Image (cartoon, rainbow, N blue to C red):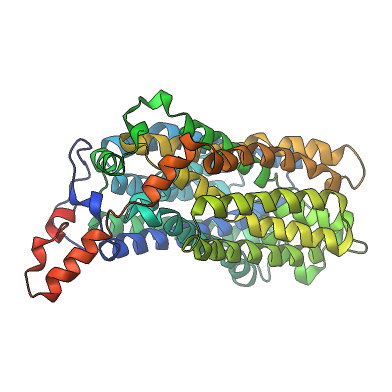
Length: 498
């Protein structure tokens, strides 16, 4: 299969026509999976860098905490608009590649809009830019996550998506550190910092537009609704025949994603400048916003619960916890190779509840360790909920994945509750951690159902036990060994090419 093709491409794919992509072997899926995994890394890298730049923008303009929450609202508010609206419509009418290109173009457009806003120090304009960028990233999530789940043998869907998300976590960790020592090492939060930021956004815009061109000319398979229906019928999953509004397993997964993401996400809080040593200020600002998960409240937790802990020291603990999060995704992918993903998911989410609960009562180093372990076990939840939620729903896969991705909007709904609980008493962040515990318990209901309720468990197990894409690989290997032509096997390059 040609990796790049410079002939004229059509971005429209007929969803009612089955293609050879429904039976992709592991070997045939390597290139598209690697390309999308690179996108995950770059997307995580860009996100980590984006948060870093946003924080410097806030500090330079001395924006209040309440007003700065507009950035969070603009970003998370864009996700359901993309995953349930424009990106999902493009996905169902054109295909995955079209959404990849659309998302990258929106991301680049938002970066270009941010450029003059930074020059003129317009916070309202910057929020608008973040909203456009959020639509771009939301579009990428709408396509990239389900694509990794369905591109290749169904048996390994959870492993694929968790492994790719692990590289996303690595990119999110690397970007802030790079930004600290390259872009803001000397200028800190003064007016000169803005001059650096505008060029970084321009560089991001140029890069993602170039990446969109690479995606346009790349030959990647399109998995259609007919392909997913074929897989559902082959594995005898009867729920795929039901109308979309009767896919209650899917909506339960979307609810779990909303609760999990809301409990995981925390509203950024600025730390007192006096608590940060001048040399470590740049790194602190980077780390406090480098993660979509527990970032700023992790630092507040460390300061509130551990004696003689500054915000800068809390940032170091956060960096360690973020490393735990990345390692957790790699470990989860490893365990899923030997244990059913639904069991790994249940075990990890159960540990999240246990260690997060312990963090509400423990203090000092013990409490920080409990919260770090919470991050480790949070790692596999988001991608595994999505992969399990779309298993066996056939022609509803593209539409259904948009509902699960829309659960990211929980990040805009739950954090204000946690913030109010933390502000209710002096140094109340530790006790306020009971709020995410409650939402994690709600998400845990899906993990229990997918393991113990037959209507949930059976479709997941039947799809997971499928030999689609595996038997094909064995047959192609036998044909090759016997000297016959390789094109007698299922899924030739001509059939797979877009």
